[in-house]
Figure 1 (cartoon, rainbow, N blue to C red):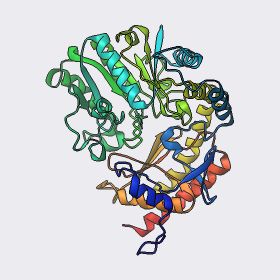
Figure 2: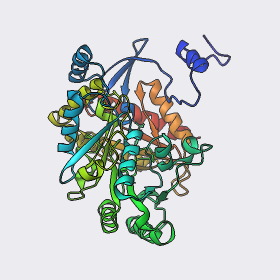
Figure 3: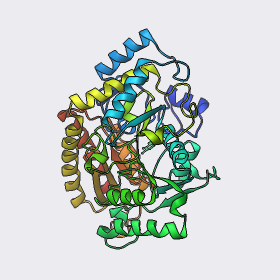
Figure 4: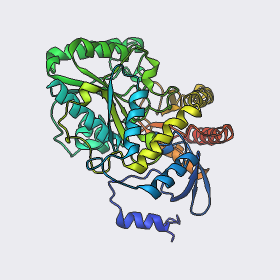
Length: 442
Ligand SMILES: Cc1ncc(COP(=O)(O)O)c(C=O)c1O
């Protein structure tokens, strides 16, 4: 069916229009029917390269054969028994594996949940019950999910928070040190120091530290626009938490499982030793499963039965997750993330030197952001530019996601199993889409 302007409306777009809540935003209205590795195909058989990886949910790639086999075998044997009623082996094995691999010292325990938001909420519940304190410190630009507590901890107002107030109380956002947009408009090299000074001052003029249960922080902000903080930020933040009896919770939901060139972003900081680490997204290779893993005493603080839901740690999702942990390790995906990242940074940084409206290319491992601005001096965000890049790339067969508080960042989160040829082809499309957009202007 064609519209008045001649564009074709697909049956799926009609279904979406008629039956799906407009609260759901689809960046690329194409109906995918098949996917493998870093490729997807629509119903006409057209192939797309996937540089979105379902927002870092597919580090091991689409339909990894080992995941498919494990899921099939598990579905034949036992699709579900809720952990609230009986044990199943996958839940126990996954909890054990996660406890063994997460870089936290001493005895650990895991809570399995269904989504990143639920893992965030479970961790805050544990922190509150362990410390007997209620305050939670978060950071501007941070994203922790869309359920109510997680949303209260999320920074972006539109489209996420506006009109949904009030949020749970006792959440206190402080500035995240963003070297590209130093919140203090000074030398970016001092913004970590300034952010932490403001936080320390906040214990006198915002919330007393003895009322704060936890700091929850992303080691690299994802939705916020791929913001890599200065190297001293997390270690110094950890020290502040330690000295004041505040729990240090690291949200690795987007950064974890190889994405940034190590198993976890916190592996870049030996001795950081957080209290709780949150894992989600890529853990299930597309199936819904997440986890909060932390010190035993903290994770045991909530009353028995108070955490966990009907499907948390479901047998099929747990079977997929057990495979994912092995694949990330055996296929050296953290190393691969570093290689992918180096190639992307080299090519895109070269482009940025020729085009002032690419204000920055930044990232860690294979988590990369390309920020577009109307002019490099004013740094006014160029959201429309990003939309043009996405549309042009899609028409050439490349799927890209957006990021950033002002939605002016093109983000790269491709599956880490992408082949060199696919990466090269995808980057060539991205470069073409960028150059075309930049030469056309507004
Ligand atoms: C860092 C971070 N935390 C939490 C979440 C929420 O995860 P979910 O969408 O699975 O609830 C996300 C999702 O993008 C995330 O990137």
